[in-house]
Length: 430
Ligand code: F0G
Image (cartoon, rainbow, N blue to C red; front, side):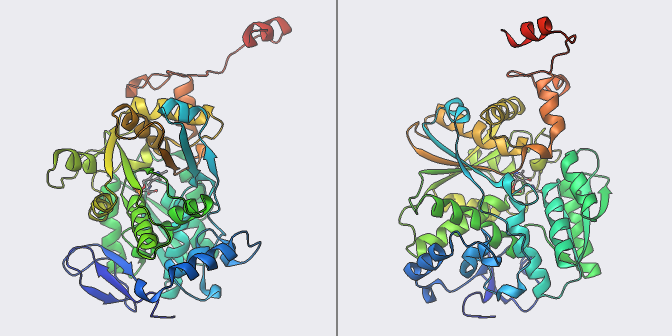
């Protein structure tokens, strides 16, 4: 490997540096680590040209929407990459969802169109490539569902064993099904995601298993490609805002890190603002940011957006750093706001899982508060596929979520009719 391109891991807190020859997820001081490269050795204009030349490649690892950008991801020879040709996801005009949010220029980047149905595939292609680089035979993660679905798939591709720690009770059915189908050893933990996250870190260090949560700096490197790809789709014209849901807070950290690198390389010449949206029942970043208080975990997080039901997010420091750099904001959204926004994303024909729709719910709130202008160009990230959580969809449309305090405001309930033309006419209004 060319050590000039990616040569060290660096602590977010104390800037201690570590060689990448050794497996490490955190600094001796306890801080999280960034993968760093010497950007002064990279010619930004040349790099942009290389990426443009790769656009539309038909086959091979560099046709992936992550590895197209490999110089800023993990610059290994192609044969070492573990890939499902992820990325290359669509950027939609938001239609009805845009009107609902009060935005004239809302685009939705649908990361649910990745191979396993979530943005995690971008992190996982890089994470499992790192696992292979370190000759790991077993990988593990704690997950609210999507990370585990993705890891199980990529581990299967790479011929590795995967061990999954999920919180007991609710993880969305589509995600559990994928973990089992891709042959992940699936362990349900008595406790919530934060307990599972704690346990998996202990297990990985004691049992010499490679950890693939977003505390792993290579996961973050892969996820930077979401922002790279949006910008390339926009011909490198920088939007005013990116709006993105926040759970364990890796994805927004990746977005800001990648954008910052593009800015430093002169590939973009404007800094977009980043809005991170949390569910009100799992909102430690929002509370801290809003009240200018110290970081404090939420002890009993709860939300219908189970993907982001996280009280003690691992990447909160990286997230804050990105918010500072981008003059960003944090917003929280209620259960009702999430599900109503989801109904609009779904009815616009695009569709996404509940956590993703925090994006549109949060954008709407920020427009109403006058923080995002209705004419501004906004890119919202939809993080997961609509099919991940059919229970939430059907529950809303049948108006059966009352016990969670959620009304089916825009419900489209199935109707039971007798088999006659007259009954059909009455039902469809003709
Ligand atoms: N949206 C979806 C659909 C997710 O699955 C997640 C995280 C997020 C948003 C939040 O991203 O954690 O980087 O802030 N899901 C993780 C998992 C935690 O285990 O699948 P984040």
